[in-house]
Length: 442
Image (cartoon, rainbow, N blue to C red):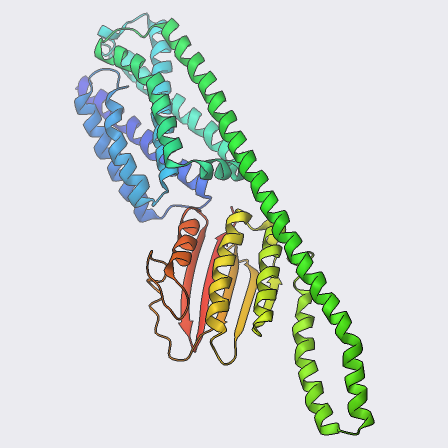
């Protein structure tokens, strides 16, 4: 009866640890609640694996917790649909936390009750204290972790997004090479963990983590510097094009006045009316330049790409309208990546619309309070009768000669998919192709 009760307590505590870690860290990192149906799936996984671990493990379970890695990977990858870098880092973090909580609780119980590993589970009171203490330490570590994540969420997203698969494999392998030898000795030999060995492991892990952190900090700084350089180049290019257009406008001003005066002197009022209609249309295009300025589009990379594409479209006699109804600088998205996305989508829009009788492009930036997300919409005219499967346009190699090759849109989808707070949708209605990017607040 005592053994069954201990097994029940172990299963309950392990289930709580698995379930609480997965739910709380995922909700904190993504800043949104997990659906109830997914929580039930995760709870079932947690109970099943806890039972399996209890059946396989009689003593401390440093090594046996490794069998949870596969179902944990399934949960993150297929139930929570997490990215590879988030999944792998969560696996590593979970294993470290559960090992630390078990190791610390074992040392405290051993010193308090003066009992060693070979007869650790012979006493119900000692076993129960060990399990409860391990759960308490794990939950304490989890609370501290979530508090840190909430405080540094934006920086955390930036750092996690910089990890590549190769870097993650290196980080996991390095951490395992430090942790596993001691755990193997402890688990397989059924002996007490050497305090000197533990201190050495902690010292090594601390130094290596500092070096890894410094490396990724340098990489992030380098990428940020390159991003700022690219932003400056695109910003300056747009400014040069703006000044050039204004210089041409100023040069044409005297010619416009003289041409109007000529129609008046010769009393060719019918021709003057046609001339004024043409000038009014050109003036409408020029007035839209008010939106193409750094005060409204207040992020250099976005200003540069939108300004550049605006002048390209204007040179092809494409009507290009821009509406900015949000503070672009506050959009929670890497602006270098966002400028790449807009560049690809606007290039496609220009190529598609210039083949139509009334070429138009309409770009909007707005904030949706209900969704707590910034929404970017690009609409462009397309040729009449265009047949396009919008559900496949983001697939690699999928293309339409009426719009462009599918490589660009596949790149767009790839960038969007790498961000946890963004989605992209496409639609085709009434000879108008629309692409919508939704970027949620972090």
